[in-house]
Image 1 (spheres, rainbow, N blue to C red):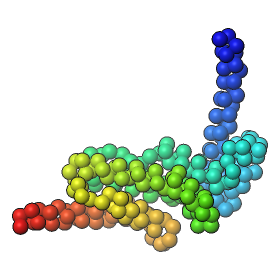
Image 2 (image 1 turned 120 degrees about the vertical axis):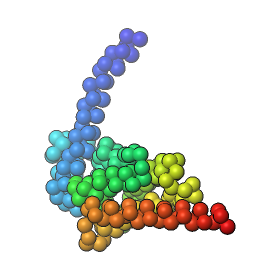
Image 3 (image 1 turned 60 degrees about the vertical axis):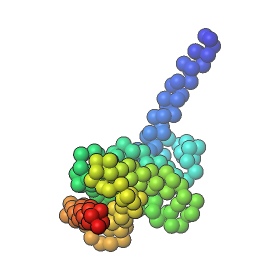
Image 4 (image 1 turned 180 degrees about the horizontal axis):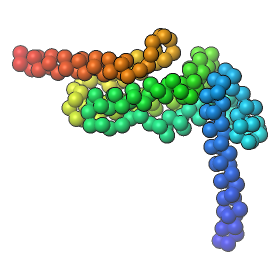
Amino acid sequence: MVELEKQQESSAPGRRRSDQAHQAILQATMDVLEQGGYRAMTIEAIAARAGVGKKTIYRWWPSKAAVALEALTVYAEAHAPFSDTGSLEGDLLAYFGYAFPVLQGKSGTVLSGLAAEAQLDPTFAREFQRVFIVPQKEALVALLQRDVQRGELTADTNLDVLADLIYGAKWYRFLLYPAPLDDAFAREIVALILRLKGRSAQDNSISGTI
């Protein structure tokens, strides 16, 4: 028992140093990406900024894409934009109000680089989808599910498709179309969803009286 306690005491500082190095590398990755973008990012630059050796990084991640993906995922989890405001309109406006500025900051720089990398590397593309894209969509679907439970969306609403429409508009402007990701665009998207919701409710009411 005494020997086990000694082993735990001796290993605890090592674990703390390992955790500290891990977090330092993720933060350094985001800093390097913000400054120069994904294509200019190197493992050497991350190591220098984090104060670790390159071997430490390669012990935990097989490539710069992998470390960038984890850094982005950790950042996204710490800044989840899925607030419960009590209404569909409020939830969506809060979501866009967070997501649009983020895409125009360091996370946007990382995302655009990783999206480009995913087009070139099918293995990384699958990991990118599994680790980041799918969980982000699932969180949005969960937000929309709350609105179904509140009765603001009908029970037969295809939440997967609605989430795709929301993400599609955001990603299209972010990656391809030279138009701003701003409050006006957010309000147009939300207004359109609310109009379609109202039309769907009206159609259901009419069909129920026939």
